[in-house]
Amino acid sequence: MQKIPTIFDRNWEGNRKVNDQLVVTDFDFDNAIATEKLDGTNVRLTVRNYTVVRVEKRRNPSKIQKQQGIKEPWYIDASEHDKADAYIFEAVKNTDFSDVPDGEWSAEALGEKIQGNPLNLKGHTLFLFSLPEWRQKVVYENVPTDFEALKAWLPKQKSIFGNDCGIEGIVWHNLETGEMCKIKIKDFG
Image (cartoon, rainbow, N blue to C red; front, side, top):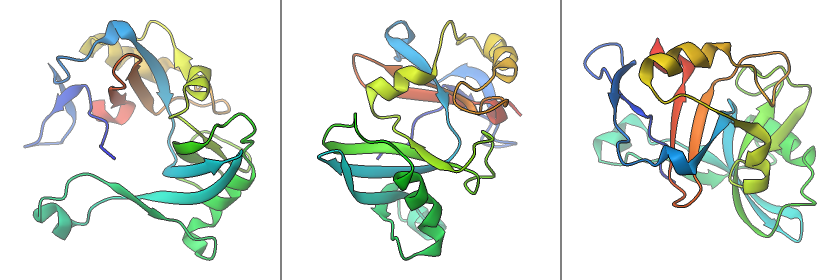
């Protein structure tokens, strides 16, 4: 799993907020869709015959692992018997997989007890952002990519998925190459 790059460079020496320098200079925004970035817990599901047979959660490298050159996150198995994973499994239980083909699918676990519930959801659910049909449900049209325009546009947006709340950010998906890039409101400071 690779982290999704932020479209603008950061002030690495200072507050780590973005500046107006575009860093995804080769990204083709004309062949991309802009979707809502959902704030939850990243998971990966293995689906067979419309049934989830494996649940994994994202693991980020520790400080020691980063010093050893391990920069990218990976997935580890979640456990139904681990209290820390209880809401992930509740989200799995509450999600309809009748239109999900066999495969491994990255998703976001969302809900009342996950990440402070910024989407104001009742209960817990999953959103399979790696499934094209599901991604289409959270598309925003005419999203600016200019620094100042995007900085002004983002805070004015309402969530498509959540209940009476703003958005965390935007993820652009290039439909031809599969490449992605993102921006969050908090990246601007």
